[in-house]
Image (cartoon, rainbow, N blue to C red):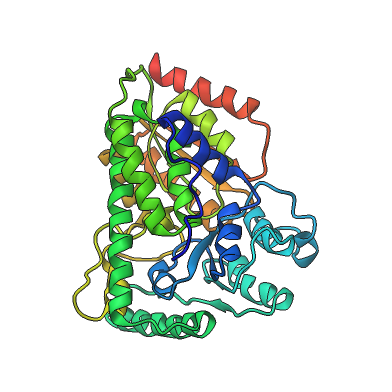
Length: 388
């Protein structure tokens, strides 16, 4: 039985619990992964956006989301060209500097840089570094079977690395754990949409991000403790603009930027770390669990610039997100050097202009530290909406 890797919050008041979670998420030393390995546990690192974590979890591994970090890629820089997004470099930097020690690494062909991340990792580390090929055409009638087979390939790799045979019952048990986690994350976003004044934007983000850093059983316990306490707060609503943030599907804005946005408006919905919330309903546990996971990815999922599903036009899905959250405006952001994000930014802006929805367009980078000019521009935008 493994000792919990994140006990720091237990026995503390809500504000102190949230502080511990923020500190965990901002710490580039990734202490939970280190604590897991110190107990003999194995770590499966996976890059953005989506990864079927249940498969690694069922083998007793820690699925660890490689989402970059706020640190200078002093060693990783020499492994890449100049014009690449920051998250690619800092994810490798975490491993080159020993902050995160993996037993396997999986990336996805969501863009050229991400696809090439597996061979770059493979040249620098001796553990398996693979690409998980999620369906490029989810509208094909064969996509679910294709993905089931691809998940089977991943499962065999996980079994080889972990030394544990993943049984159907073990995978069903993991699916139940993750179903509960998805339910709790949906509850968190219900709070953001219905009563955004009860939880700060940076606290909501940190609660989501911490899911990719610890066993889901621990994260379920954390959310089950925190969410009722958040609902009990007596914080009063303020006269603020309700805003949806779009553009955080891969590289993440720094927590200070999210904190700054929360001072200017209510962030009532977003696509930040959407991979952790990709499946929007429970995954079935009856029948073949690999098939059920594949079916959920195709049929019970959200949207992002890196999945091309003709049934889910991203402009339409964004408008639905705005309507569901009863938002007054949208922030359309993109990480610097992110080709998928910058391309979709044009489509989003065009759609919002046609509808007449107010929107603020911006770029970010995970290592940015100065926000004064951006905050002034955003405050001006919000004031124009408030006093129009």
